[in-house]
Image 1 (spheres, helix red, strand yellow):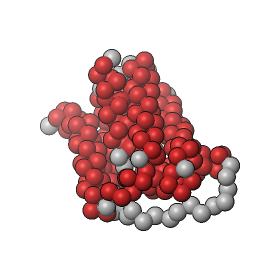
Image 2 (tube, rainbow, N blue to C red):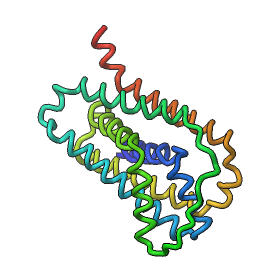
Image 3 (tube, rainbow, N blue to C red):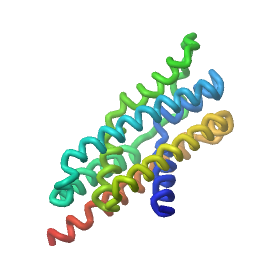
Image 4 (cartoon, one colour):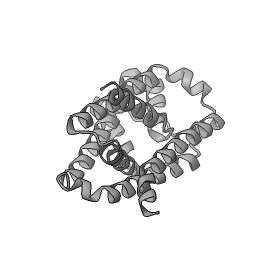
Length: 208
């Protein structure tokens, strides 16, 4: 159980370190609209992530009884998904200067929807979750209870990290230079690529 919890927390932490539009939306919304509004954006993003997780788990449930027969195929799809996300993250050059929300809309629902849309406009988000679901089901061979615990820890870790991002928004904005962001994206991208290799390695070994 400790291993599952630690892996879930680590995954949530790594995913939060994807320095894209959502990350900077949290910082800028917290600075310009207050921490509460920033947390509403984070809530929207988490709801979107939760929906993607459920979609991916639901999709794999169709073959749950035959899952072992399709293990190689699942590994290949998951590996490709994580590899694509790794390359994308590594090559991404996110700038600190992003558009500031100047809307006069004060309704909290607006900020929740903003967080949801930030995930919806990035098709690689669902690719990432598909790869992670494939990894825990095929490589780690988690049971249903293990999967529930794992993804609960992932979401909890992301929630805590996003709260810290909102709370530390002003300091983060000062230290996040373009050069540092690029280096961090390189690190996260490499992590995704390594996991994709670990996932597909048994398939390659069986072939040769």
